Image 1 (cartoon, rainbow over the protein chains, first blue to last red):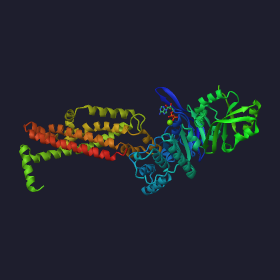
Image 2: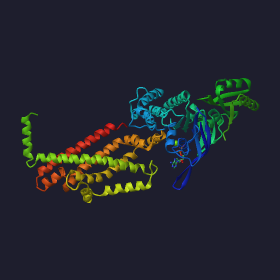
Image 3: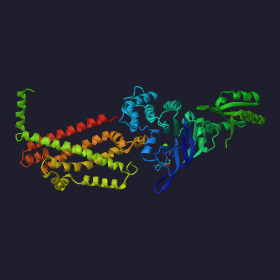
Image 4: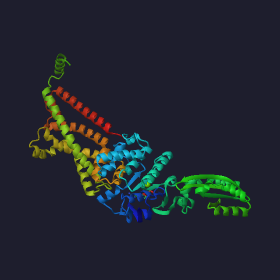
Length: 341
Length: 233
Ligand SMILES: Nc1ncnc2c1ncn2[C@@H]1O[C@H](COP(=O)(O)OP(=O)(O)O)[C@@H](O)[C@H]1O
Ligand SMILES: [Mg+2]
């Protein structure tokens, strides 16, 4: 669907060269929700703007639906953009237009007749759940409603791809979840490929199939969301993952725990899928001569099932602890012995 | 009002303004309104075009072009800096060429428009700069042409500022018409100068001033009302 090859974008600011996107190669499948996560300044916005030609690459190529998007110009670029639409962090609605007029705008651009425009706008308003607000102006809407208008507008010309640049970053957590649900709904019902840029792990966890981690213009890690969560390789990724598991937040207590439990081990267990529901700890205590107490626990729902982290303190004979660990490995639970170094 | 009270009012007005020739006064009022209205319309058109040109040719913008941007900017700054009374004098040959005379309401128009359009263009530029860049970007991402962006984004999104700008300009134009009147363009300024000042009839000057005040207040009220009405932010 989207094929990105050795994409690079440099900016020159006051004779200084900034590499915003550095040699990115990746493929995004049709119907996929693909997330790109990175801290501010990582080059995410530049990357997504390269996808719809708002920015031209210094080198490399972007193919969408077989069309070479990079280096496209004029009328052909404008036509192609109608099939690759975008939603924005700050919604970017025209304040001078009502909800329905905003949604009709891309249809006007595409030259759709007035009658057809009307019908399509009504359908879109229903799709995003804005019935009754058709005549409202953006200033009369909440953030979540504004983003719904943004989404309806983006879907107006029946695009193949929907790009979102921090589409939920200006929203409160509840509204974020509602908008993310809407995006999943659209993805499933209309089969639209979605590319989301974000700095929030929550967004990735909740709706993305695959994730790419971006740092200093490069994709440093990429894979299925659960795999990346379970097995983060890079330190940036680990930091993002800890955003969710909350391990970082409990670190002071962790240090206290090391003081409190001079013997035994503190183990971080990472569960994936069904195993979170199985009584692993019970089994552990039953089968091995160890004591186990939960120090910290956290479970997240991701698109491919639950994902959980548990920190337990296991005490007992060295050999028993060792066997307990091996048991955990054997049932596909990732166990990591925490140390206080 | 019945006829009797109306007559009484009339005679009362004649008492306090003995020198005012009302036919002449309404004629002058009409000329002032004519000059103001026409010059406002043309100033709006030219100012908008020049303002858009300044905006679009600025660096990183849709028609980014340093030369055109520089030349347009220079034109605006030069004509904005010339005092109006000097501009009128400078434009005498030009006016003669077009209208064959420098007298009458039409003859004032070139100076009024050339004096006010750059002033308004500057305000248009400020109004356009206020537009959220993200909205322009959104339109681009939808595949909008530049002409679509101009007509459906830039102008509608800056409407309140464009209207309050033309209101201020139009009020200034009322003042300019009065100055143009002094060199023979007609209107209330001409009347006040020729009859009120030169022939020492202060009541004429007073009435002309009051009418000008009403015109200015009306323009300001109209501008404020429309501007508030189109502002949906
Ligand atoms: N138009 C531009 N001109 C110059 N530098 C830019 C431009 N756009 C982005 N950059 C730079 O590129 C880098 C990446 O920016 P951006 O893509 O906005 O990152 P992110 O969206 O991840 O925060 C930053 O260092 C930023 O300053
Ligand atoms: Mg960004």
